[in-house]
Length: 482
Ligand SMILES: Cc1cc2nc3c(=O)[nH]c(=O)nc-3n(C[C@H](O)[C@H](O)[C@H](O)COP(=O)(O)OP(=O)(O)OC[C@H]3O[C@@H](n4cnc5c(N)ncnc54)[C@H](O)[C@@H]3O)c2cc1C
Image (cartoon, rainbow, N blue to C red; front, side, top):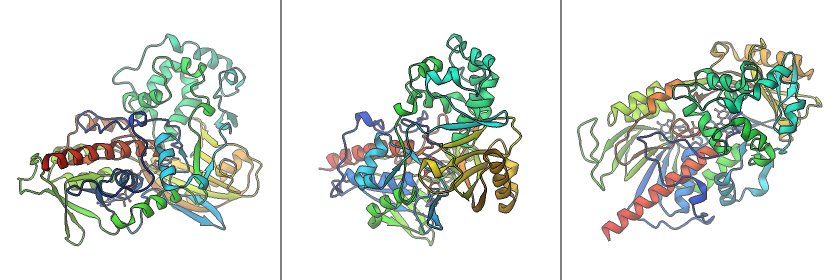
């Protein structure tokens, strides 16, 4: 899931937009660490998931001093890989699109020969009307597909005559209006909602789909973009993992910033350097921030970037930006269960499948890492999410059994469950309205998967843009003091 995004991050008004995060405007960064060029500036990064780690790498490449504070005893956040009988299992993201910022990071880290690329033309399926049916990505395939009935296909032709999205329109309402209920429930809803484990009927177009359409170069007619081949997967950046799984990516980032990384150093307090009353920012140029860590240590930074989930970020902001904290507390996360199954060679070839709405199954989708990434016999099912939160109330054994029996019924492939992982992902649903107009005190920033796009390409694009902003302000501060 979550690998369809092709571009840059969404920006909420009120939040610092950053220097051009878009890659085209950025100079290629050197792959050799730069000696610190701005000795008077120290940046504090809270959180060492891929957002915090990549920000550290990009800051290092610009010669900006920083420290990364991580609460747990490991880096990577939701990115976590393990080995089962010599097979790699990924307990978070399964792969990433190799967009320019991702390619640049791979180059900086020297991981080019560790990539395991997904074949670009590998088929993707949707389980619909009792069987797996291939998703058409090329105009010619649309005529042949059995995913839609003849009536459903004819309905698609009306799309160019429908209007653009309306301000309060949800993705579900928008796609149904444009393509008809059959295409929405059978194909587009499951595929788009699967990216977030979310319910498109609860997601506003303006927060989610609009950005995705933009990243595929589609502005007016989605059908027009399709006919021009914009969704042809060989035309989008390839997807990749790494020999040892996605954690190899974050481990390599960690190795790069290790001297600046503090594990088991959760941030529990934040205050302006001057003793301004709670809730007021000093805003004074040059004023810094004090971060209190577990154990009561205090660390001073010129600017602080929060890369942590919304809830702990709200806790930190409570005393200095209570309104921002209240907004973050509105954001909903979807709870997901991932079930890793291992089977014999099942002869399945493809990326995997999503389950169409109304099929009466609890599984939302299954990734076939066996054929997509050459990991023998590994199949990973996703359950729960916004459309089935009750699933997460069950035990791991029950969830695993549901995934296994449904997978076997659909594919005929015999497997055994080897791991069940529970995780969370920002839902990007209606609750994101709370972020509109969010402002933070000067010197505090968010660089997170709820403030800009959730996928790894978006995370790296945002971190790159944030590093450029911070380097520019470090340069300005150095100029002012010289
Ligand atoms: C199940 C799943 C599947 C996904 N699939 C894909 C995919 O296939 N492709 C793709 O591109 N993207 C995918 N994504 C999205 C992407 O992986 C995530 O958005 C991204 O990894 C989040 O990274 P992060 O650093 O922003 O946050 P996190 O990974 O949440 O990291 C935050 C870090 O902050 C630390 N922390 C928390 N509180 C504190 C504190 N007070 N002080 C210090 N540290 C703190 C945490 O311990 C953690 O290490 C997936 C996500 C999930 C959950």
